[in-house]
Length: 137
Ligand SMILES: [Cu+2]
Image (cartoon, rainbow, N blue to C red; front, side, top):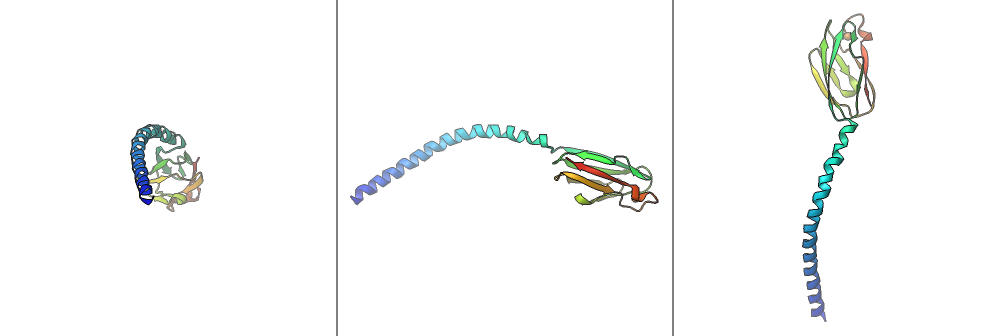
């Protein structure tokens, strides 16, 4: 009785191995079609942002030429400060940006909201007016 049940278990195990290997090849065939549809799923991601936005922000006495910058959530922002007159810096505290004339900062706009930026160099009488916002939506 025990020998029969052992034989039975061995046959079951063998059958299971054969079934698994048979299923394995079928699973591989099936897996190719879901993976083919996966790129279309990731193709919908760029609709929610993810582009690289290159911005050259001009600064003069005493204002920035783009005081209301708008980007999308997920965008990579490459922002360059270009002084047209005076000596100004650019600080965006929420994204740890603080650059001088001619420098470029890159950050990911990964959180929706409106973030202040300002001149980071004491440039003169109008310094306190040199502010702007980046809206991430
Ligand atoms: Cu300033």
